Length: 131
Image 1 (spheres, rainbow, N blue to C red):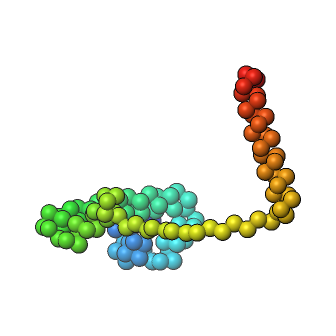
Image 2 (cartoon, one colour):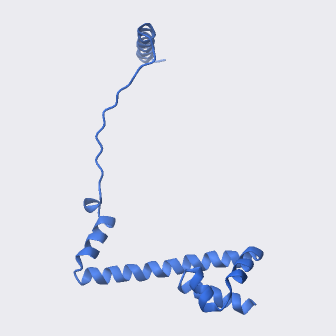
Image 3 (cartoon, rainbow, N blue to C red):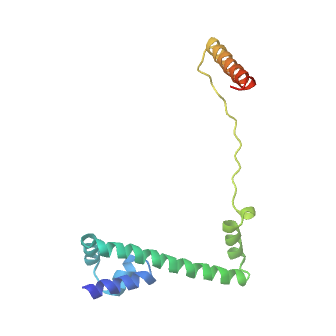
């Protein structure tokens, strides 16, 4: 069983797809899910193998993208620029007009404005007197 788990994890590190690892390792789907739920250490190793496998696939993809760019593939060049250069990134421009409805009565608004004026005057007076 330990050897089966190790083989499964090795496959998963090279191809981070559970279904493919199950298929190529000879481990049944129910067995894999039982191992994962019953064996915390195995479950952690599965996550690590998946992460390493995704890193490997990403490295391969980047390598292929760079090859395509070197071959002057316009789609690859555009993809790279749109995702790595701010001048070519997709941009969204938003223009909006905001209407603010006040819930205060005119008298309340006047009192609020007066209060703000008094606080500002008090702050200025405090600054002038070095307090």
